[in-house]
Length: 422
Image 1: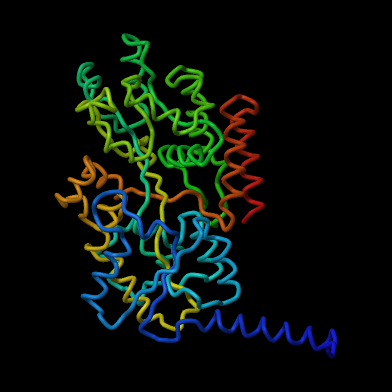
Image 2: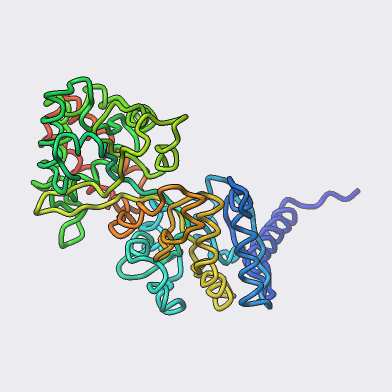
């Protein structure tokens, strides 16, 4: 048998690679077949409601029967694959899921097509906070469909007993804690997760805005060493040193923090929305009927925000079928599909008025409380490399909380290190 030369073999392999690459970029040439890439959960339902992919296809068949939707199951950690596709200008998927921390990265790299022109009425359906969370420099780059909201849980019975209404400022919240704990020292004042983790970044983000700070200044540079930021972190430190929070919070993750409010051990707790469905279940809660959930209070110079996370669907800018892809995104932004996500997966959706729906409330007890938080939802700090930014913030915040570094020094370190990422 004749042996082929190394040069021939090399050229042959290059040709194979080129054909494979071209095939990836040219898949699904039928303009009426739209491919949606997301992790396996899209075909799951955690209730007796149909899975979201079935709802999307059903509504799509009613509105645009000529369009076929193919669902490409991707790994749960999709980012690496998406980066490969986008840097290769690959059109394997026309629509793909995008996580909240990826927004800045994808927007700056132009890896997600702006939706303002193709879906100009999207803001009539999706709340401004949802579009801002999945937007950048005024461009909407995603249709949100599921996420989380963080806010303040409080004991309505305790506040009523001691003559207080829900706090509207942090100063009022501290006054309530000190008054009740003077009589009930066994109760914790404010629970929150202080261990290194993204929950710590989210709590800091909440307080930063409550004290009037912002992630960036007018020039777009990070503002983590601003007076408002220092004040926010000093408050976090003060909750420990002043015994408004248990000293152990500096080591608590969210799971450890959230167990204590349902057990009736605290007056206030900062946490995600997802425990609202169980707080009125007597098998799981000691505070049945004696709690509420509101946006975290803010000082007069600040504003209440609800730090959100979650996913949206974005359109591949390299898709050859953007017109029909936009129609699929229009369907995903519809009330029927957004409601389908709420029934199958639970809240949070940013669809305007969704939480007034009695069926949504039936499947998600107390979901009507989320409407006020949706209105003030805000994303985590923006960064083209959020994982690295979050790690920096976690380290410096932890140093400030434990007293390893003075608060102001930790914030200066945070500013210097975070700025190097911009």
